[in-house]
Amino acid sequence: MDTISEAMRRSMRLWACGVTVVTTSHAGKSAGMTASSFTSISLEPPLILVCLHKEAGTSLLLQQSACFGVSILGEEQEEYSSLFAGYTEVPPDVDRIDTVPTFVVETGSPLLEEAIAWMDCRVFGMHDGATHHVIIGEVVATGRREDPAWPLVYHNRAYRRFRREV
Image (tube, rainbow, N blue to C red; front, top):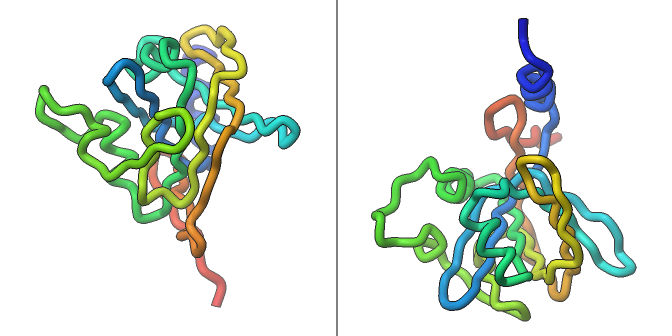
């Protein structure tokens, strides 16, 4: 018989969600990781929420920097999702973030140039979520492509595409 954790994992696979890359930078070091636990909370003030595993390098660096960026991936950016999820090999002396074009705005957190939208944030609050930190960010700058692609969507352990109506 499955544990409740295993049953929950199977159930949550059916929740379709967009894919983001959460990045941060501190003291000359940058890091990024794929995250699908992301949502908007409030427009006044502009707040978003991300959840990161407590032991992840990005999470540890974010605690020091108190700022982060969120890059929303488009449907053609599966390779970025795989790269920042750790499924794509990079040389041991290379940071994943250094293999993609980035830019910075307010906080110094790198943002992915090819993302369909991005948000630059300062940590507004951080809460214990068992194995994860629940991080609330205040958006200090944001932008998007003028003609964005469809978002990258993850559902039932695979990337999915929206069906175009003709």
